[in-house]
Amino acid sequence: MLRRPVEFAQYTSLAFTEQLAEAGIAGSIGTVGDALDNALMESTIGLYKTELIVPYAHSRNWSGLREVERETAEWVHWYNSVRLHSSIDYMPPIEREMVYATSIAQQGAVA
Image (cartoon, rainbow, N blue to C red):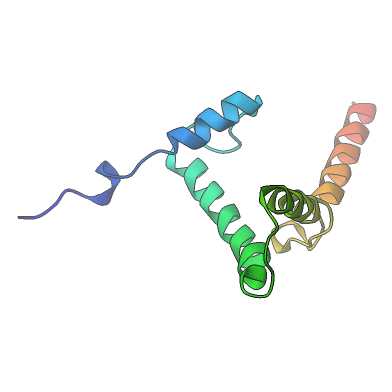
């Protein structure tokens, strides 16, 4: 017996959508709760595991949840403020945001 396409069995990141709503954050792409939200989150979690958790998994013993939370907060800060992203001309996201805000302000001043 053939199964239906995978799409019918995929979840739509309801838990992720609920977390966004609780934090007062709007979904950034697509409609809230769709598979694109899930793909974005899975991609970010994959980077987090690859760049923070896995490299230190065997060489470091986390002393507890607070240390993992602190290291996670530092990684998120680095990811958003320092890390160069190829998709935005090798700029950190915070710098790209400032360039964008400046260009919008200049367009408003011209109009």
